[in-house]
Image (tube, rainbow over all chains, first blue to last red; front, side, top):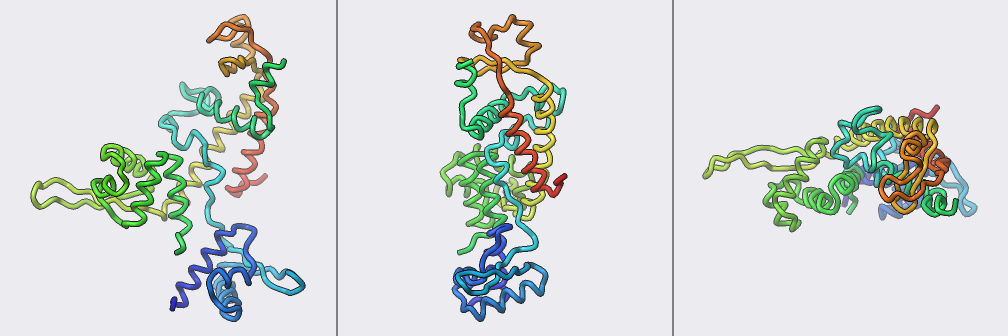
Length: 130
Length: 171
């Protein structure tokens, strides 16, 4: 049987992994394989320790709590695919330099691809039409 | 089994920094706790020199570290590598801040210039540069067309806003 602290750690990890949206208390205890009684006590303990906050919400006609971690874990999603992270010249890159954000070919390629994706059209085609 | 969030992030970061091989190495280190480059090469099937290259790269970002011991027979040092998940948060924040600065510089550049484009070579140059070469593509010599960079400006503004929000710098 997991120790109390292990269970708290696991619960906190599950709550944190749901980001700013948080998780319903009932979904948490189900994910942990705990009973509803254990689940609500666990949530209370985490709240008392200042690790999470609870928001009351009505779900399928019943009141429950949404549990949200106070300290959100860092996310890397906004940097996935960014060329500067893996760029060997990153330290030499500065405005107006030999390698610069204004003239970088890798950044240019990334921008063209992503801006086109965001605008759902190909800049090449757009230019070719003009 | 639950995987700690920071270790999961480390795998993602490794993949961005060093591709598929780096991901394999970090996953192997996560499983083994601590391992030498030889052991990692054996476990992942990645060539030894590549394993070392990736480890040094991750080390330069403080994402892995090592303990050194001396081989009793040869007297050479043996490096035992392990992950440093506690450095992940700092690494991400630093990268976000640096990238944000770069994007802001780029946004200024995009806003203060007009661009011309060759759709055949995917070459985009500023109006001033295009004028110097008589609006001909520097690669294929075909005529350049005007490039509307509004989608790029909008994308940059959105990305900057997203990063500022994540860094708690919202204006």
